[in-house]
Length: 304
Image 1 (cartoon, rainbow, N blue to C red):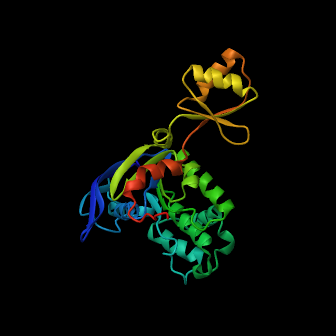
Image 2 (spheres, one colour):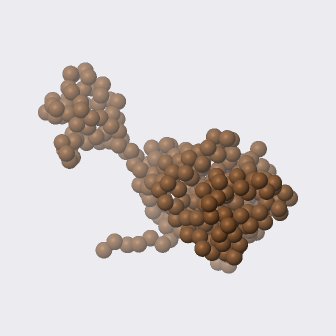
Image 3 (spheres, rainbow, N blue to C red):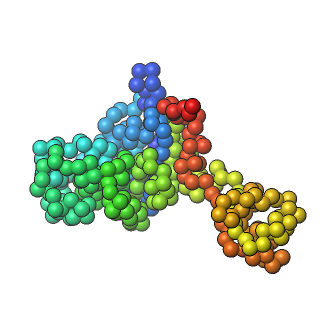
């Protein structure tokens, strides 16, 4: 199985506890978002998982094995942590060929991922001439080179244009649908919400949440309905009889707190009150995330 298992993982740098007895699991078949403020321990956790640093205690394994135990790791795990890591003097094709040779990957696979990632047209150019977005695409090509069962991406949409963002969103969904384990770290909440199904949230090195995105948002949303009606007087009276207040918002819309749209729809149908719009309001991922991590953000700004 390609699941990622983090068990009591701890990493201490001098007086700093970057990761603190962290435990969670990332399962295949869904895209998992890895969120947290700067300094929360996300990058450290990913580095420990990939054997780029040594844990103080605890374990980080893939399918029950340490990354360093894989003799040809790109066949099992593909990762993009730093798009600037590729040698600037190499061409894009040569960079991927070097990785392919070291992992016994056929050369034809290099051309496949160059095409898949949208950099085939510049495969002969030196990487130092690439924009950040092109480097991101090349890094993703490298992560996919071995057709791995586990994919780890840190800020994969950074530097991408709108077309690139749509491409990576679709690619991540496809990878998960194929049964792979996909873990994506990002600070872009609106974009993350468009492709993530599950969330793991860290704060100061500790686990704050490990849940579906829907459950995460619902747990931090108070019921509220927004509506439009051609007969606000009757609807207000009907709601008041049930103990709810209808408050005027903007553009002839009204809001009602503490109730769900389904109940208002049934009430309006019962009394023959026309509804022109009716929708539950839910917190955005960004709002829910900020609510959870407010006390775990070491570098927060203050308003004046």
